Image (cartoon, rainbow, N blue to C red; front, side, top):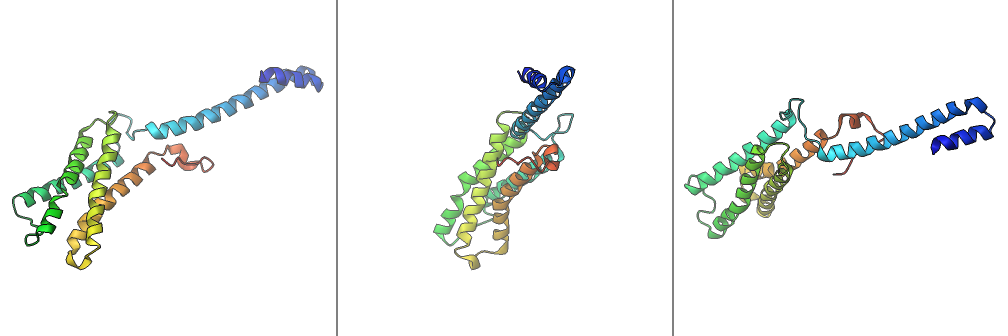
Length: 200
């Protein structure tokens, strides 16, 4: 259709034999526009479906780091509750309300631990990999945020170690999610300032 319009336009303008050449240029421009549009759509779809791996299918170094940090955190939580269960660590030994508040975190922390470890053992291309990761990060963040919110009401009552541990739980998921967002950008997007980045 575009080629016919170009030929007709060339004929009306009296270009004669050059009409075919003009039509070819029109075809090339149209194809280029379609290619650019297709590249834009492909870039957006690629961001949503891309899994950062190296060519032989293993996890990329960034993914390995994220997994190691989350698994280390989960194992730390598991160790904390194990030591609490056997009485090595006690919170609120002389305050029943504080003791109950501390143990109220067990379901939330166990959910974060189970989901985080499940994600670490889930194949990278499995359909549950991303949902497990997102949910594990959300539970971990919630556990840290709730504790920090409580500490903020009585800041002098809690030692620096409690603040640091729960700040780690609160901020680690944000850092991992941000790192993954940056790593998931296609390489071409980093050098193309004319194309907007996706929000999600």
